[in-house]
Amino acid sequence: MTDLNMFSLEGRTALVTGANTGLGQGICVAYAKAGANVVGVARRSCQETADKISAFQGSFREILADLSDISVIPRIVEEAQKAFGRVDILVNNAGIIKRCDAVDVTEEDWDAVIDVNEKMVFFLCRAFAEKWIADQKGGKIINIASMLSYQGGIRVPAYTSSKSAVIGLTRALANEWAGHNINVNGIAPGYMETNNTQNLRSDGQRSEEILSRIPAGRWGTPEDVAGAAIFLASDAAAYIHGFTLAVDGGWLAR
Ligand code: NAP
Image 1 (tube, rainbow, N blue to C red):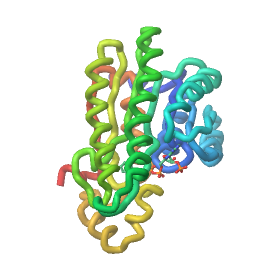
Image 2: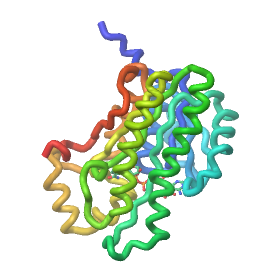
Image 3: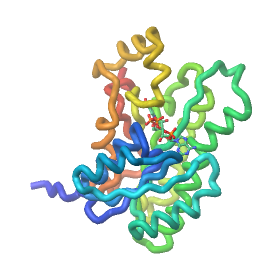
């Protein structure tokens, strides 16, 4: 009989960025249900996430921080440690998207996307891995990638660049840290119903084009990423390194 405890996150602490809404909120709730203490990082209140978790007596704390500047990292690490002690799982979920023709992209918009989606991801990974290598107890990193880690996308060049970088970074860090018992993996969500896709879903033509290409025949939800996020954070994924798992309703298989 398989020991399903291998999927339990009981006694672990997980830090999830972008925890106030969307996929980040879904992952926080899933982790708390799986037994983890959850630290949510966001630039706005995570009250809604906290309420969802307290409804089943789960354990959640928020840290308010703007993730566009890496100078916030030492405070995040310190506050997380104060909240629950050692952080065992890091989920780099926060991300932004800016839609416009490539010829109209400004340097400011380019930097804004790369700073949150790519630079912050690397430096948060580094901050926690440094601790995990020092205490030799390992850890789990899950980076949220995208379909645009594999495809070019339409009118989102900075986003595509950043998400393609996330998948490469996930492999690069896995190579360096697998020997330290640190699993670095990714999740590539397909087209999900969150703020990120609000503009896309309200554009009738694009929305129809996308929906008709999804084999599952529906947009994804934050609940759809829960299983993959728990799995990759758990002991069940101990020998998985550098892989990005698509949760996409079959989009990439098409
Ligand atoms: P979302 O609802 O827009 O969530 C993005 C999260 O990132 C929000 O919590 C947002 O905070 C946070 N964030 C952005 N910039 C931040 C900053 N400077 N400081 C702190 N937090 C910041 O969209 P989502 O779909 O849940 O996105 C989650 C992740 O999944 C992102 O990395 C996104 O690229 C990725 N993804 C989404 C889809 C999709 O179809 N939805 C597909 C593939 C990948 P605010 O609420 O304050 O803006």
